[in-house]
Image (cartoon, rainbow, N blue to C red; front, side, top):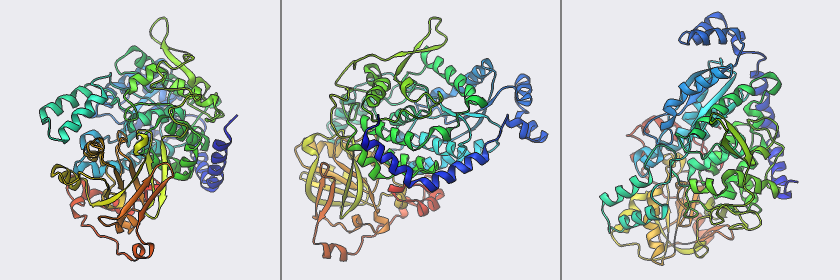
Length: 605
């Protein structure tokens, strides 16, 4: 039986979304066609679509005897998580042939690495790349020659962009095919230690690069629980990937067998009797399941934007209040860095997604009456672990272990790390924002200190190096929202603020920008809405104003006479530096029309 609060939030979302969801489903129904796509193409259309295909594929597509599967790939070999995708298309085509299907690369989408662009001008393109990816996906699928689609994407904005694009073709069965995390390298604790030493000037660039290279050392997803691995958790718990497929390392026999199984399953659900389009999978209940998974694992705050935007693509209206209400009843079951010391490989070995889903189902915190890429069997199959079969060329699933392999990493519902989810909504006279509480020690959940107002993260770094921040303060870093400069992540702030916190100072961050999914040690009220460029209250804060950030009570408040604060003129900022160079001039109109953070910070909805 589903928990009463989970059901109440779900019912509220369904009611709120009734009109927009109906419009979306009507669009999906209109796009659906019976039979193979090739039968609805003119001879000229079909000839163009198969002109470069092998003769055997040409005959199969033209005859309509088997499904033609599209591949939308986010491959590049600069992004470690996506480098394995270079060999995927050829292998997926071979697998399709073994299962009576054909496959074609429909198109590629851009895939930028936030780890490379952190703190640099290119990061100001990062968030909007999500919507570019969505539009690129639509272009790839606009040829209308496929009965199903495989999506190759893992990281930050890429998976949300692919999901939004896929939902524009909601009549098509779709499956996500991951590549898996890189093996464990240098421990996260040691990496953070060296970063903080570098921030203090105690080690040089050579030592820092050595530590970073030992952390990010091979093909595969970065091993911390940031946005990329939060993406993988989401698409699995929402039913878009095969059970247990998220965190299997690249280049292993099990990884290859899971990829083959994904092709076979996609071909299966394109058949009329088992037809399972993505619109049937991504329902209101599936999105609630995604939020529950995010809260229970202490996932990336970026998903307070992405989940809202993805849901809107399906005609579903999510709000931060929905997330906050669910956080009241969803326990925190996982400690994976930055919420703990373990990495994602340790999480998978300790029980991973299978144990997590089983625990949440047993407590009635997930909807089981949902469709997945397996069809209408709900989430119970996602409690099973994948293994190679006896011949080593296929996958079998077996029930997961009864208990956690390491309770310092993943715990049962009966003994959680916290009875509250990993995210909190903050409200007050500065607006509304979100904060990730799962990685914050209890003594840092409340901060009340004078404001230091900054208009970019470099100002804080300069003042830190000059020794001007050896005191309690709340850093207010504004003009970092979607309309100002594209809402870059402000991950460069974490090491200096972490150093000051470790020295015993009460410090916090308040910003209308974003923080990396790897951040969390320092209390940070992020995505403050309305943003400064819109004249939001954050634009009226002055140096020395006392700001209260209370993560337990959900308060974000500036202690200033209300009449005087209201009468203050909002600060202005010269944003010309963020308007040109490194491609930013091409995104000028995107910044101008971007919605607020609570609406997903999107140009599409």
